[in-house]
Length: 447
Image 1 (cartoon, helix red, strand yellow):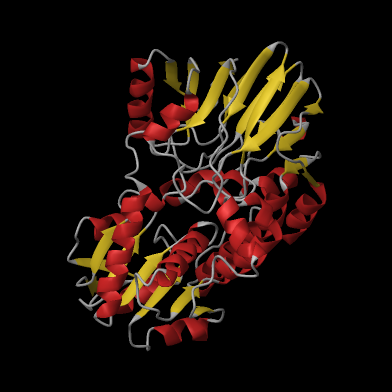
Image 2 (cartoon, rainbow, N blue to C red):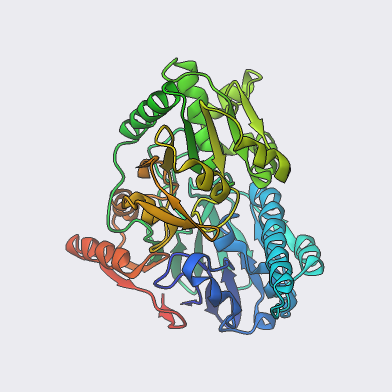
């Protein structure tokens, strides 16, 4: 058995790994590249999609599912195995991705520029949906010479890490591992002893601060800014992060730690995700399930509103504070959040709260580093609002959690991280007596 990374090798996005044994070819994830690496979505897969026998998906983030329709278009004819939440969430993510691609083509055409053809379309999506087959946690299944089992990765509802066995060898692919110290999702399961772990290293260079301290700082920022009539802007991912932020706003309201003010979620995709959450309540923590059992919505602050139309979104800029606006996208590379920041950054009463990963050189990093002015949508915007970083909200395990999760494993290949992050994690693992190395695109790793 061998595994060959064809994505997320020395980069954070594009998760895609081919496992081969006895002429059987199994693909683990088929994600899109995002951020600065987005142009790599135009590159070939590195393998022939027609040669694949099956695909296993760890979870529904776009960087783990985003090239599935292209895989179908290029001739993959087999099933795609997913958990129930992934099956429900996947269409929301991919249909939004298609909408953004269509809008970009229309923008280029309006400017008289040549617009490249869409890499995939609604027909490919429909075919993909017909191929989805549900699998559950903890049940051992067979695929050709492989036996596999999914276990809870604690990263999203229905997220999984994958254990494979074939030919007397065993492999675990971590997918994305969740942050163990939060309340919304269950903690990641610990892995079995295997011959090789292909492990993510998104935060391989640092550990998260205690989440209780993050929540205390969150309450202090909200109380201060809202108390002086300001607006709080929270760039957020539509899936998981938005709902988690809403969970803690509701909790802080209940504890009377913050004032009750209007909370707007300005993201149609986040609205669709929130409608799915009650259908998969069994995949959340016991605390969240307990709240649901009492007929309450764990993700609904008292004055929550979802905006849908562009007109509703624009109207938020005319409103006076105090209020909270949660909007996409989380990496500040596009989306409605840019319009709100263009209007709100010049006002010193306001604040921006960064809760997730920001790519190097992007708007988020500039704000975090204290830029006095930034370019947004072609305009120079003066920055008077204060920017706060709350890394404890991250949906990924920190370095200490990754080391703990790997436990006694002695052979680890690192993926899904920037090179310096993977180098730092690899060094820490080697200091603990493990064999750890950074996986390379297209280079086979013997299990």
